[in-house]
Length: 499
Image (cartoon, rainbow, N blue to C red; front, side):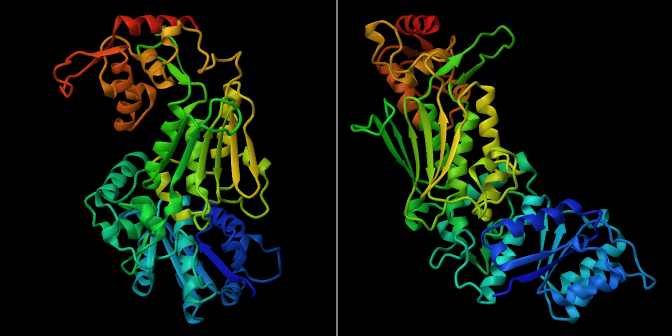
């Protein structure tokens, strides 16, 4: 089947970067690149024809006319019409599929003729708004997938964009969506208010179509995502040695939406890593860091959850060994990519764009294909062995822990015998506890989000074993509750400092 040709139109100077990004994205995406061929006029070789005639000829040859409309109307001909509007009219006359994307500017920020053009386009088309290149990619992706389904070129859409057969809006958690908007507005300038109707928010994110929700909506905001996709869980295991062997010291299976999965898996790993505390010499706060920087742990886990193949029955697996961290996901690199490409800044081609965009908006992932390159860079900055990327049946990231001459091994810490049974979690808590501190303060220093996990694995064992005590022991839930070291805890902290 010949590829469908897409004519990308805009005021060139205003959207040079966006046009090039769309061109590269459509070509490199495993699905879109198979069915579509984007066209940019500036990529044509010089020919002896009038530019306006060539533009209109290319519009006639295309299947889809895609226009980006911003602030500027562009230069006009003797009739006072811009090339973009002439192309739009020509596409209309020749019954082409038209896709229009508007920047998020207010009307008073646009040229008058541009507002008039937008009003004309709006009267006959459903249009989408965007603020960034990634929002534009996400919107174009959703539109082109819908085109393939409507034309019956494909019978089912990509996993994240597919409308679920039975799930409804009632299966989504309204509070999760409001919390998302609240954070996305703060971190990324998300344009909608948290008071906006849920339907409007989901529509803006391309997660709702004719009242039906996509698979991505369930994974992002579902009350019980695993009720619909049991394989979306994350399995975490910790081993004392360098090989998989039973009994497994710690094994957890986490469920929840993608944000919860990332947080839970990340904290599982951090809870098993040694936390080194510095001094107050240059800062009033206590500087410290994990033996594997948190940014690397988070990036590897987010990468696995955001880019995995959700049609695969496998699950994301996170395994921490004595010498390394391994993160597996049932997914594959884009066609033609090599693992070496991941070590450099590269084009962002998310396997699940409708899933990745909200994760970016909430601050869980970054843009421009920097994630895996950042893993390599940060590892080098911390003198860790270079991470490895492997693509076989699954995709695997291996991140190495410091060698024994870089950090004291957490299993064989040389402290008095009666301290040997302390867990990594308890030791990390004791290292950062300074004077009287609240639970929230300790969690923030250790970069931990989940109160339940912190209480179960840090506070309660430390209290039970007499390393810390409460300021108000007769009132555990006292609003001003603080924790402090006992004599036993101070002794352990002293021993840990010596190492």
